Length: 30
Image (cartoon, rainbow, N blue to C red):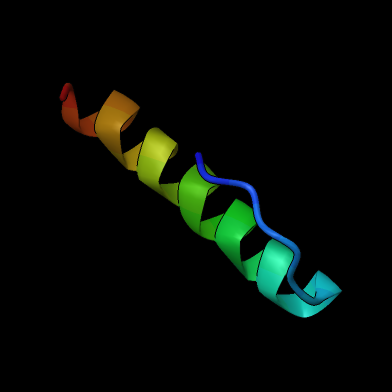
């Protein structure tokens, strides 16, 4: 994950997206 200086809102969105992606991969068996 590339870390850059962003607003808190953008950082939160990126974190939520990454979490959802990981959960999807685990549930889908990727």
